[in-house]
Image (cartoon, rainbow, N blue to C red; front, side, top):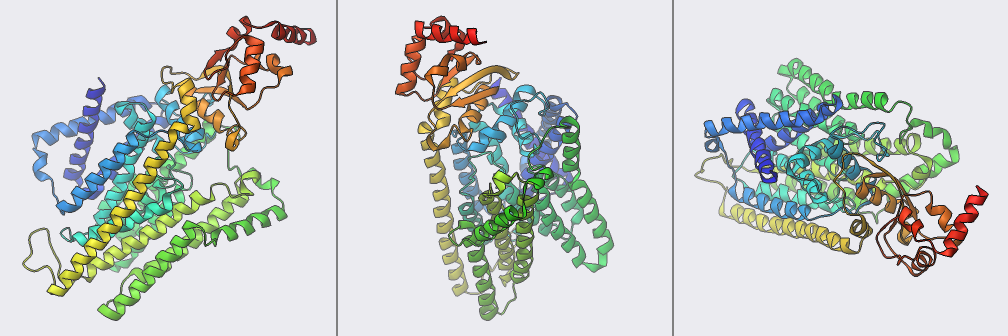
Length: 616
């Protein structure tokens, strides 16, 4: 049955690819992202309408009908391939990274505190979280990517690695869409130039990486894909509109800040619409339609949250402003400015490095080739975008974020990583376009009689390919090895220790309401910062989990009587001694049923228990 589901899932996607290709004549680079976005948004609407499981089978069925049509029409004959070398490299790289993700486990805190647990809740209940979803703390976080992962896991399997694999497919579809901006498909230099730029973006993603369910990296790469779509179809805005309705609509519900990234894409769309004055009114109407429809998913999400979770306190509530004094606000602003201009930060270095390199490139091209690149205009526009984003993030810290988190700029590195990736990626996209326009001889899809101006320029072309290819390979190998290293650390990590004791439970469809007390050391504040509790909550799918790093002998029996299970994740000498002295247990790492412990109480434990009963 599992293999049948996998085959149906793949065939369904092929069906969607072919239908979109046939009906809308879209460039192949944009088809995967359009398909995934369409499926995700429709799944999301199904969740809002409380027909989540029904809608995914309808979507699967539609895709299978498309696959049947693909077979009837012998659609494999319609496949267009540009640069075989590029496709080969891209496919090999994608397989390597996705294969690694399949073997990966969660380690990052936020996988357990929200992103992983919310997907697990959806997979087990086949519904969006509601008031009864007591394992979910952050109920107002949008469920965009969760819907895509839910759809994939429903057919491919439930595991941490599978969740990361399915999200990885989406991320690589965004990268693939970025290459759609290249019009001279035979110019491998353009592919390797853009590929080198994309690989460099991973440098600013080290705090997130793609081996986590965190969506901070998805925001910029989706926006960059949107830029590529808008530019490619700048003379066919109807076609761009069809794609953007789904892509940008999904982007608004990837994360609450996704609406800001959508705004950046829409501003570029409106700019493109105003360039051609002959059809300005027509294009303005299209821009307005996209502007409205793109924000429908996030508006529906706000309505859903207000209805389902009315009266429930949400994170980033504006009421938190009342707790901040003028002195505290000044402290936040000072730390924010200091962090933003910290030249030891990878993000700050990236912004200045890419901007300086871009300016130098424009100057050299102007002096040597006597050409004006549009990159200079892009730098100005992107600088404005950068300032607007940082002002918005500062406002969030002041007006929306809880005081204890705002005072140390919680998540600052992730927030800045997102905009730096967008900033640098947009510069690379613009530089790719300028480079493409700089070739004196244009190449079509068929073999051209002449591809270079001279033997000398051909040599420069070949050397550039070698250098950029080496840069891409080195950067991607570094990213791959970093992910491998992180996964090697899993064997000694806290999530591994918890899973060894509790296992990753998928065998029940309801939340476990038993009361668990979890014991481990407080190394790296893993108990006091709730890391242990969130991991255990995810593994057991339980809503009542408390953590403890030390037992007090005088209160041991009184403490345990309020729980159903004691979970020893990390044992130590004191814990073993107390469990042996009071319950005749070894105290090794495992789950102890409290009722069974009380059946084996020693005289010392019975005496303490009797004293408790007398006091009560």
